[in-house]
Each structure stands twice: as structure tokens, then as C-alpha cells.
Image (cartoon, rainbow, N blue to C red; front, side, top):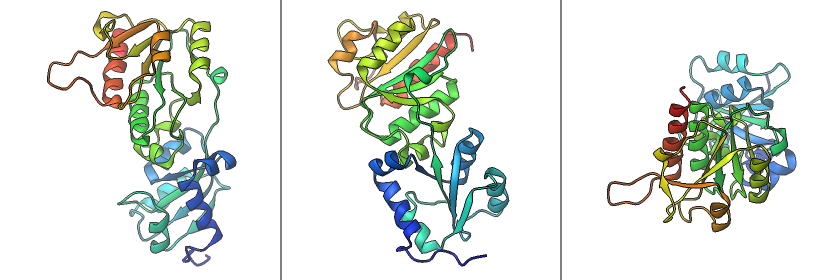
Length: 267
């Protein structure tokens, strides 16, 4: 077995750092980075191609090598790396010593294969990978049919979004598009859009019937939805606040609305 990669100047390590730090590099190469054995296992179970894996044996759990080999394809390249080099490339604390190159799917709206009565989660201009990851976990837990990001300010396959979603970015169809394309597509497919926004015309979410084709449309925490998207949606809904604060974290609000839709649908 070759010696572990021990120099941060190794071309493969420098390439990993570029992928980790630059969304333009990820887009150009059609690659991203998955850190963590659990996340990698979820990705592989979803059929994600993994051309290479970088492993720090010192950080692997006892059953890590066997579990890792079960998850990987026969043609995945395996590279051992020293602990100092791995810690330079790793983007989270307490890593379990696994970092992989992955080739995520590139979807368009027209690629979605939806059931007759879809439940969609829409995020406009999401900029925090952590929020995107948390919403993807909700989408997986509720078995939403897709997560659609309008005019994103963060890369869908940002390594931190993968980490925050615990790999659920690979278990739920997710894609990016423009506001105009989304609205046209929803009208074409008879999907009713519900904008979550604090406006005078908004009514409590419990007043609505989400049993039909539904898209729950969420904005950013800082600015909410843009006026253009909010006004173009079919309805405006709120989660009534009983305390001092007037809103919830966007991922929490999305979870509340999503599971109300799931409840109404009898799941």
C-alpha cells in the first residue's frame, strides 16, 4: 500500500481545497466534497457517483474501514492521508476521517418527475448553507417531492450544505432555477403557491387546505420574500406568533408548514 499523502502541496490536496473553497470550481468540474462516513453512505445509497475517497486511518472509527468499503464502488480510488493533511482539508471539527469527491446530479425543472399531488418546498435567495441543509432534512423527513431554490446565493452542493443536511441533499430532488421559471412551471402544472410572509393580507396557515398540489414558498431570514415573488404567489400565509418575536428561523418555519401539509394529507 502506498504511503499516506503527507504534504499539503500534493496536487490532489490542492485540488480538494479549491473544490472546498470555490463554488465556481465545483460548477466547472461537476464535483463536490462530502465529509463524513454517514453522509457518504447516504449519498452512495442514493446512487451518487464517488470517483475518489481520502481517508485518515487515525481518525476512522473501529468499524469505519469495513463500512467504508461496503459503501464505495469497486472503481472508487482510495487515498490515505496523514492527520495534519486531513485536518487542513477537513471543514468541520470532530471529523471521522472520511472525505470524498462526489459527482452530484444536475437537475432542471423539466427533469422532475412528480406525482399527481406534489408537495414542494421553495426557497428564494437562500444564502446560508446551514439553513438550506436544515430544510433538506425536513424535506427528507416529510418525504416532500422536491426542494426548489430560486436565485440562490449559495451553491446547492456547498460542502457545508451537505454536512448540515446529513446527506439529505442527495435523498430529495433539489435544483436551482429563476423566479420567473418557477412561477411559469407551477402554473403549467397546476401547483398552488403559498408565500410565507408577514403582510396585511396574510392569513394563518391553518386556514388553508394543502391537500392539493402545493408549493410552500419561503424567503430569507433577513429580507423575507422579494415583493415580486410574494405578489405572484396564489396565497400569503403566516405562522401566528404569540410572544414578543414576530418570526421563526426559516428552517423552523418551513418544518412547521411542511408537517401541517403532511398532516392534512393523512400521512
